[in-house]
Image (tube, rainbow, N blue to C red):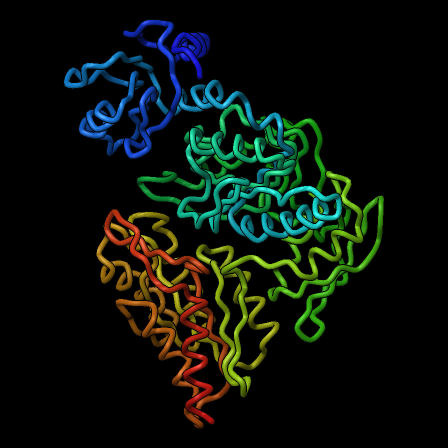
Length: 503
């Protein structure tokens, strides 16, 4: 329970309060911007370009006692507070209502263009094993894959939640006795104030490449890069990758953190990775730092995952996790929808399901595939989202066309844009590389065709790269998320059909 005066005061102190039309002793027992979550006593937040007055009227019917907005809604007979910027106001509201829950957690934030999810799950695997051995509960995570906060566990459809939701997850974790919370931090979250006021014990900057440039995201690479760099002033210990493009600029920006630790394969890295090699289905590499010099093993495929593992080892180093625990955790670590490997019984078909969805991740995926599966045909199955990250269409189309023997273009959250328009635009760049392609209205028939066509005795062994959706079970069509089988489910289904057909 909080009183309205607390919210009024914090907004006034931070020069966000425009006017207040409510009594200062009004009791607030709920906070949300979703009218479906309103209960009696709720402070309702009117936010977003698509906000409609009908949402507020619905909130009033359900018992909202106060609303906060950038403008008045005369149709709603309710006390209200007017602010100059609702996005900047929301973190302060959540900070008051949930009482700074991040202070009770050891919080790791991960940003960068590629590898955030896998790194988050490597870190979680290490911390979970450490906590298990100390008889403490499972650690919390917020990622583009899923959310777990000690109370709720569900599949995500956004990388970083809005500040009100995020603070609620922090509170759930703290109230559940959880010590560690690992989270991906998107450029949108940093740009639009979702993580304002949050203090990261560790902030990891993985890498940077052109992405998320569109009218509704970032106008150009500079805006995208600058948004990413905002993580450092709210970070205690910054971990930065020495192999990243623009490393010098990242290092300079990291001076805003209290401490800097580097990781990577470049000489001079504090956490140095070296002697990287593939041994059958495992990836072996050595790590040297001031505490140990030893070998680690990944059983999750993809040579590029060494960079993600080095970031996780650096985080574990900061948390003083014993290196034996790091070794055991990384050996078994998995990330749903990331480099999931499936093969037919005759080993003629290898299917890799991966979330790769931007230029940097595509480059690393093709580089790794050609190194690990030399001489095999490559079929790439992918798409691009509607009205977002528009540069991906040319970048991914060009890369897929250059390195694939065949490309199948499929839906990947087309949203409110016509799927045919997206696929046709990508196809131009695939065709420029001289690569044949087909367009599909659904992912399932494309995956089935790629797998079952290999049963023909005249075809050579193939690696099928199925990218973009990973283990997700929803497809954004229009403004809604429609349930669908995950790529991993489809691959297993059609591999079973292949195996039956060749018996």
